[in-house]
Image (cartoon, rainbow, N blue to C red):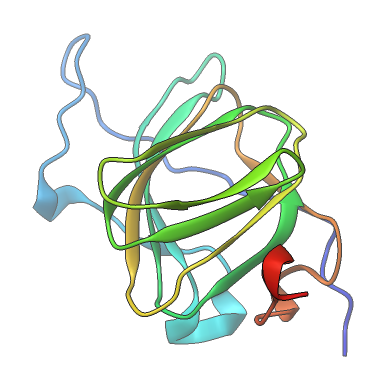
Length: 151
């Protein structure tokens, strides 16, 4: 088994802008696999907007049901807003099950992991600088995990 890279940096495609505003209609959304080697089980993201000077971005993220996002961190702070499904997020300061309408702020460099259970999850993810993923353990090769309360 090969060791996954400890740092995964995603180059986000530019999104066309009209004047000072950006408009992205559903037919224009381009989905990209986050972990291509997982095939159809790969989470996907779609960039809605990215600031070319700071790298700050707003993305849609889709996670399949019964999926574990292994522990990782980002150099940028990250915000999650749940649109559909449920997402359980765990970090050193707590664990929460986020439902549609729920919000989460994750400070830069804070290790965290997440799970979906019975349903897919769709969320808005924003970062305040370039989005990177720094895996702390086995990375995306580890697809099952236990909650802190199940350990």
